[in-house]
Length: 185
Image (cartoon, rainbow, N blue to C red; front, side, top):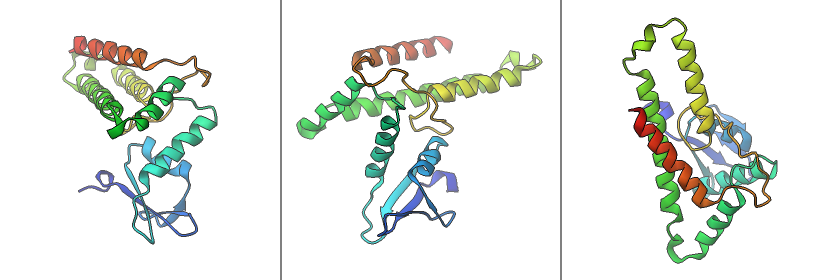
């Protein structure tokens, strides 16, 4: 298994410092966010107890980005997430989110495959530059959803004042994107 396929093991010491076991140095939450944006999976464990702390730290990274005004999650989505914790068994929210992100990753992968497939435009001068721009655009559009190469650059420009998109709008947009991608085949 290649190094990039294995999760990057981060150990948390009793002093709460985080240690990258691959590079033998200490890292910050922002460093960990960078690894994830670069497509690397991480696993954070407590050195003493062996407890997996990954979820706790990933939520902390999201909370810190949101508190700095880097609002990605509309307030309505955050409310729905909180409500899903109140439903016995978590309700349908976890499955919906997982399915949505899986569809988005699959769509991104198919678009990249279509761009890389035998394309008669590949013989046109400057095609490689256009292709590189398209790939960068796709990565920026889909940032933050946990696929290799995502850069973390796309953000919801609206502040958390309740004016963000609600869950139905997001579902509609995902369906429209899927339909557009299907037509590109």
